[in-house]
Length: 310
Length: 237
Image 1: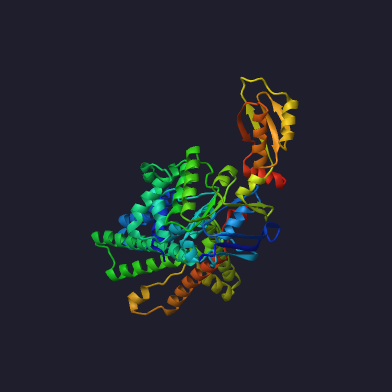
Image 2: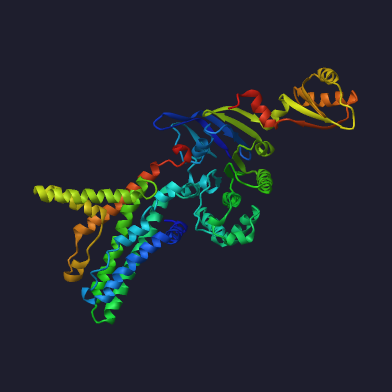
């Protein structure tokens, strides 16, 4: 039985203690879990990744992965890593790069060619790109190649630091699909991303890191219970309902009206049930609702509701 | 020792155009001297240190400053393995080039009936190869101390100190100062002169022990420094 990733009271300072990057961070990530880390720039997310990968030594506390130190070779052999600032040997071709990492990962040499081709195809890179020097790759292609190297050898632990940075929309969809596929295979994924929508779609739980501390760890579905603003549109063929009518309907449904615009109105609702109640009441009052959308994503609501936004 | 790292280092070194131009100059210029002035024998040839210096400059510091190292160290590769593989890679290249230079020069001299005996040529090839391995160890240590091409700066500074101390020692007639400068020089350019063995069969034990201890010390210190290093751009931001 794997012990997962355990971070216990990790503190880390830089510049002789002048900069406190992490301050008593504790986390427990279960095997097979997709865990997101979000927070503002400079919050300590990358430092946390550095400690998790064994690149940085915590001043206090400790990290274990499956009961081992993060720089244990057994752990490293089962780890895939995609850094935010992806730097590669630019003289290599894409194929050379993947073959090099295949060898460094101590994977069987007789599988190299097949595995490299499969990894290349898996991230949607054209076969022709495999023969091209990395210096000729676009930012998005580099990111895809970086993900391909992280996926070599079917890692059990995957650390992704801003994986979709610089990637086109098709790439973002592909990354999301790959993450969901990995989740299905029981891979433990740590995802550091500013793209809250992406985090929300793939993660089981999310930690909000701010000023070197884990301020909250929430399951993503907890957002369903959070208050949000719902924008409701009605058919333009109909006469717009009066603002007083809308306010009365919102009050009956347990919500409140935030504002009225031509063809739509914004309502404050307490949770998913409140949103459902509001829509039922509006339709019951004769408003021909054609669309209802939450103004922010669930994660945005979750954190905007509970924390000061920087 | 890691075969993938050794081969990748070799390819990395030869894909730098500046490095290749410098290497070609240092390799072919002495051969031109030999070609046009066969009377000088094998004297114009370098001792392998210069060729190795060109190949080894930034051997670890470049990977540290570029950020490439983090991806490598995320793999099941120990830092000791990384240091030794990088050192071995440039040592092999430098040693082979330096030996090949002697061989080509000797063949050129042979064609002009001015070649020294094969024993002298082989002794020179061996000494050059040893010089390449020794020099690479020193550069590897310096390269772990400073990022980028900081190793060259350390080497230059140490060379100035050595020359300065030597001058001061001579000026004030202090033997211990000149001796210290000579020891520092021996550390910066570790080599084993094989001429005494070739000429009289005398084994230079002191030079051998000094060479081996320098190479071992440099590699051990390089591994210690690397093991203590932290790698994350978060630490430098």
